[in-house]
Length: 139
Image (tube, rainbow, N blue to C red; front, side, top):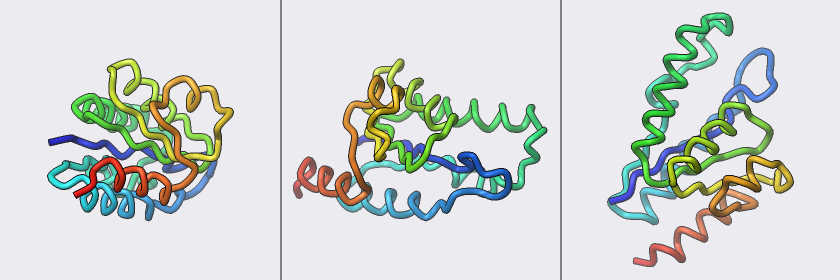
């Protein structure tokens, strides 16, 4: 049984608010339907409203982020959704690579150094990732 960790952009460069998190639900559904028996860890389920954490509450932000890194390290496969640059997602990709995890990155940012250096496989779209899983885990 494989454990997947969903990594992805939350705030990006936005000063207020967050990037739509709908991709998390979509990725979870894809993984659960194509890789039967897998477990999906979505840190957004643990901290449902990261936008409500004051940006100057360093202690709380560190606690949440480091907890996410620990959950990531307990996973087998990291699926990173990166439609735009994200410091947090980049750190998660790097930490996963260092720990020997499989890192699937969904992004158009093919020239990004973190993406190039630390991804096991890069997909142009969520649909491409879905097709890959369907082919990999034919039932």
